[in-house]
Amino acid sequence: MRGFSGVEKLFRQTCVSLNWMFTLREVLEASRILERYLKPTPLVHSKSLSRELGCDVWVKLENLNPTHSFKVRGGIYYMYRRFEEVRDKGVITASMGNHAQSIAYAGSIFGVDVHVVVPSWVSEVKKQSLHELGANIITYGSFYDEAALYAESLAAERGYTYIHAVNESLLYPGVATMHLEVLREVPDVQIVFNPIGGGSGAIGACIVYKSADPSIKVVGVQAEGASAFYESLKAGRLVSKDKVTTRAEGLAVARAYEVPFSILSGRIDDVVLVSDEEMEDAIRALYYSVRQVAEHAGAAATAAAFKKRGEIEGRRVVLMLTGGNIDAMQLSRILYAKS
Image (cartoon, rainbow, N blue to C red; front, side, top):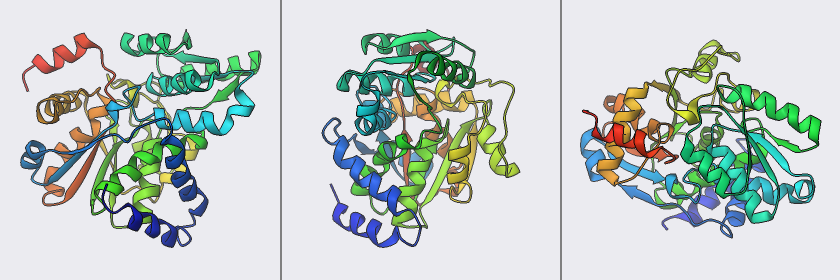
């Protein structure tokens, strides 16, 4: 690992001026806690993507976490911090799949009963993983926000602790550790692309990179068919959509939420919209360049980098491959389709 001692010292020097002392301390503490349960994920350099994009490209392989998604970091940290409160009554959450797996995985470690509400179209590979982790699966709604409202009502009715997948700020320090790992290895990173579903990953990026060096650009990525956060930033207020139309399960959120919006407004440098087809091009690109499996949301950062290639030329760029939970038939269709 390169340069971590200097990065940590820089955090402590800059966090006061950014008024983020408590949050940064939590990220550092979360890193120490998660070391007991997770190994750091690889950050790999890609000569192929560097050549294609005209810049120095590194890919953060969050798909290699135990649940094949970055979300597991937040779930473990949350369960560690709230264990005394939740161990007897259990928890309930709603998710497009990856957040649910993170809570189920954490529940399996700490011995806490987990109930999850998922929309009807969540992939079978994610449902199977939830079964294997011992979660009680409830199917409701056609996108995340409908499932979340139902989960909240069940929590009130049955006495579970409700974990909001987006507004629960205790998830953020755990998630942010993936960006801390990036800085440990590539402290001179200049641009980071991170998908935005609810926003926890982008929040972690802004907290970590902007504290280390405000000139590091954080670029969020949303699906064209689920663009509520993008539209909220443009409008300067929270925007909700009647529906979402995207194959990217991890980005299928119909509204912007209060906590991520308040944190990211004025801090994130840009948000890029990508189509499902562009994400599928990126799934192929990641498979052939770094031999990694990505789901649509997991490939969104790479899709955005291709869209912005003229603006990132000559820079040192990190692409967050945030998840690899994709159905085998869907992956086969994408890989064998013509680029």
